Image 1 (cartoon, rainbow, N blue to C red):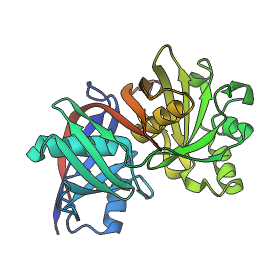
Image 2 (cartoon, rainbow, N blue to C red; image 1 turned 135 degrees about the horizontal axis):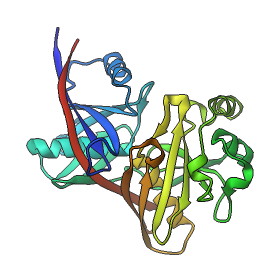
Image 3 (cartoon, rainbow, N blue to C red; image 1 turned 90 degrees about the horizontal axis):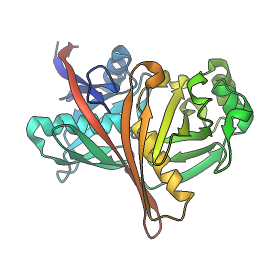
Length: 288
């Protein structure tokens, strides 16, 4: 029987038991794919990460990210939290993490970290307004389409983005049956139908919620990859060269989270970053 150490931390917060919890297995050598998936399901968090030696020695580590049911190509709060754990272990303040979607650059401080998304903004398929509203437990009138309709977008992992009215956001509630129907009727999205709702909350401020019940996350308290993508999407709808947004998520879950997302327009692509605080919580080991 072998033991595998892990730590947990809260990401996108400066207060313990706020933000989005993450489990990090700090030395995953010897674990099989099935072991990692089983441990992620046992942790029952939105994501669990596993640190391995890098394939390219120019990088800091290879990181595998699992949600409750599947491996993720990229995810925000796991990349931020894992980079911060590595930095705290003496691996430096500027790190490069190998994930399936590419290389995630991490800049860490004593208080938290910021990541650069591994891919530029890519737009995908629209989702009909009535389907989007049904999944969110809202009416089509609650969906704001002034800037854009519900649309899939990604900077490494895909989400469907829908703007809703500020009054509608707190009363949104994921309808599991509607999500299952949407996955069946729109197989392009499948189990990865992750719906990110947002509302404007003043100059440069946003409120957000993210539902992904098909993959086991009924609601997520802080979704770094989605909010990085949101920043890139919003910039793409403007003529500005760059933008920055402060985003609050998780309030309705009792886990308030604060994220800072930026986007920049390059010659042929829009790139994004997202960052926030990290607080250590637990330390232990799993025996397999």
